[in-house]
Length: 417
Image 1 (cartoon, rainbow, N blue to C red):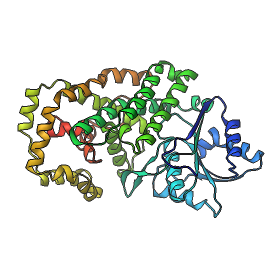
Image 2 (image 1 turned 45 degrees about the vertical axis):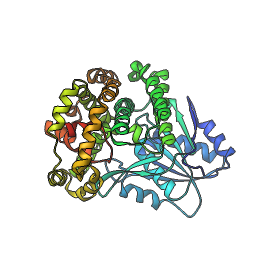
Image 3 (image 1 turned 90 degrees about the horizontal axis):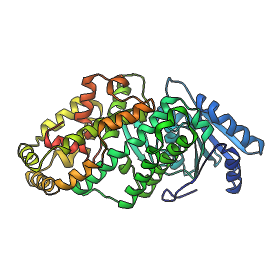
Image 4 (image 1 turned 30 degrees about the horizontal axis):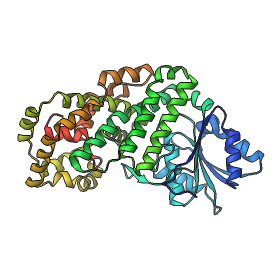
């Protein structure tokens, strides 16, 4: 067992199976529960199974099935629990983001150790401490634990579907806007901030961006930089203690679309694909912010009025099944009295030069669009299958999904959404 504050052992190489077996032997792990689906079992799970059985280890499998897509929700969590027995086992997450999140949640709640064995470089959550889950229709991040170790097999990752590789790059590009939003929340809303953690995130981001050009070709060096960057992002989440540095307005847009797809029984989309498009949208709003002078901001804020009933009704209209929870979540913003509102306005004005510096740290949306297109990722809501109205709804209301002060929350107060 490891504490969530400890960083996991990580190995990235061409064939990690021998090192994985040695690690398990060294740790005296002998009984395992593998969580996978049919595709990830074929991609890597069968090799893991054969290697474990060859040395006499005890293995049970929970192969998720029964629907067109695997979702980190109550149904699939119960599927895994149904395959558990009374033995103390090390959980093996053989898959990408969804399977890792299900495994992380169950390992934490059963006080079990787990190991991450990614099959696609599609998300930054392989070593994270948070598990984004869908409970009763709401996408929420449950505080869980980091894995004891992560073994990233480069040959498996390079063979992953191109859209999943592009999704991982999109998730990593999202750090440009999430880090900016995090700093924005710190100076305008007193949210906790750590400069060392930001530096570690930027190092992971910059390393990947510097060598992304050949990702679509499955170039080993580019693949290494991508998975190393994604795992580095997860390490930053562990160090900070939650997902805030890695999840800003771009993720809230993604969560909005994901919940809408679930409610409407439409096919799901890769998390990183939605985040990549959300990043481009959020960067465009940072461009709007960069164009505002202090006088512009003062004039806009003079028009800002918070009407609690209108805010609540908007949430009820857009998120009817979870509106009560979101209204409670947003109460610090919705129920802001006049004195608190005036103090916020003054704080925005006083710190506007710093806001502009933060906005300048975000690359232009066109540049991000070109980078994402180069690796084969979608770059517009329409390419994800969303109408203009669905894109607009996400922009206007997704800031209600988390109690964080992001760029879209600022634009909401400035009335420039």
